[in-house]
Structures are given as structure tokens and as C-alpha cells.
Length: 147
Image 1 (spheres, rainbow, N blue to C red):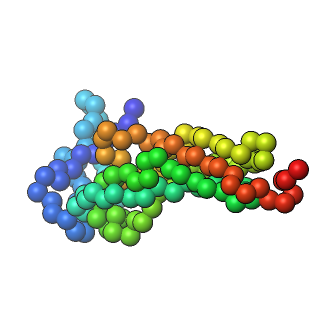
Image 2 (cartoon, rainbow, N blue to C red):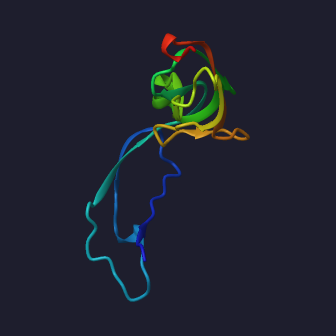
């Protein structure tokens, strides 16, 4: 079983805080007592959550066999997260999509790809799903791929 320490953050405002822990923060089964807490305090940085519309870009792996056109549906998603993270967030990428099977005989690929939410503090706002549709079309095969 795990031991959990609880801290009341009801009146905490955004910023850096040192939270001192004591035996009152720990719920234990009957018959056990807290002898010591290590570390005796936690340093927390509390931030406001914000929302932002962010562009989704597919992460393509392997060299395309010529010129390609890529479309993503939807092109943007609405995420929430700490203000400091969203301020510098310009795009989200998908899990890797391999282009190896794209060629003159198979010039179109449509895949459902998961969006990578990084850092983990990001959340997609409902009713969006974590999947996007990626359409990749070979518009001009390379000379090596041509018959």
C-alpha cells in the first residue's frame, strides 16, 4: 500500500511556495505513526491555467520519395495548460509517420495519428480527440522512383 500526504492548496495564489509538511498531512492506517518526513517541505510553483489554439504538424520520418503535399484535419486543436508553457508553444506534433511505403505505385497515404502532448501538463479541451487525420500525397515522384 501507498502512503499519501495531503496538502490544502485552497487559498494558494500563483507563484513559488514552500509547503512545510507535518504528521497531520499524512493519513496512516491505525496503529502507525509518523516518525519523520523526508523531505520536510515541498517547493511548488503554482500557475494559472490558460487556453490556446495550437497548430498540429505531422512528424514525418524517412525521406519522402519526391515532392509531397501534406494535410492535417483538424489543423489546430484547443489546449489548456500553464500560462508559461502556452506562451511559448507554437505547435504540437504527431507521433512519427513513416513515409517508406509512399511511392509512384502507392502515391497517397491517409493515417490517423496521435497528437503528442508535451509537456505532460497540457490537456486537450473537450470534445476534441487526441487523433488527427493526416493525408500525404506524392505530387512529384523522384527520378529514382519513376518508371
